[in-house]
Image (cartoon, rainbow, N blue to C red; front, side):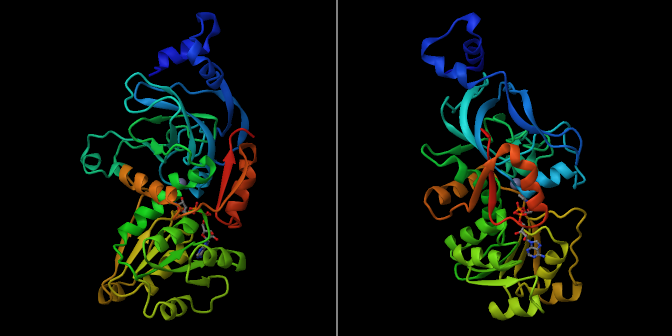
Length: 373
Ligand code: NAD
Ligand code: ZN
């Protein structure tokens, strides 16, 4: 196994070259291209930045592709009450190849395929980590938020938390699974549905939504998708949605959804970035059903009418990414061909334009950036 100390000596030609590791010498340069910003909402600069050095517990991944999640846009804008690191390289859906190992790393080999997830690392010793709720760890380190992420050609990840990607996987297509896929898969599990139940996906044609429609279908649920515009409706139907409700056209969304689902969906997965949509879901959910909160609009508050909340005995719960088992299972669904990523690939240098489209709600499925362009 090649350790970082060796990898670095290979990189430096003056110290001599280990013949069999020669390819690595070209694969770990000192600098790379990345998109970095110095203040929230500031210029997104595509430029040469240093390649990070893995800590003893980390692997260094040559990121080939990274999905662009709405969370990256929130992080850049500084939308949330948790500060980002600055300067920051965003991105947390990075898929690539392991090119170096920190000295304490076990279970990874150079050349393995690996993924950068939102949860880059956690303490693994608190009560949350102990029960596999690592994303709730108070010391969680977050890719593209508190830890430089995947909008660069080389990124570091804690070896315990990095996602394992099967050999031969299409790295562009798997990248959105690393956040969007894992998150919606876990959110669907959190709704405690059974086969044949109705689930509403609010924000169904976006990055998370387009995968939620497919995971829900693969898990045996009936899907009503909610989003805005004809193109979004068409995508939802293509991905397996049984019905579509256009929030820009519907005169009475609550009545329309309840009629389609014969009394309201048993579960609602809220992946839109809309407070109004989230609040509406507390009204159309079926009695005893579960509203799952996933989307994180800035400053949003959920309001649920207490009388109907009690009489209908509904549940409202949050769901935050997923743990290592959720990640493995979500990738398994993808590897088995049960979910496909509706992606559009552009160059990393085009990230600002992707953010603009995302802000305007104009994205169908997921944009993925190619870090080589
Ligand atoms: P996206 O921009 O790709 O998709 C959002 C979709 O919502 C768009 O298709 C948009 O048209 C639709 N939409 C807007 N207003 C709507 C309304 N009123 N009703 C129904 N649909 C509406 O975003 P994304 O990357 O899918 O992320 C969605 C949200 O999920 C973001 O806030 C992101 O930060 C959050 N997120 C949460 C977690 C978690 O663990 N909880 C993980 C990843 C992302
Ligand atoms: Zn994300």
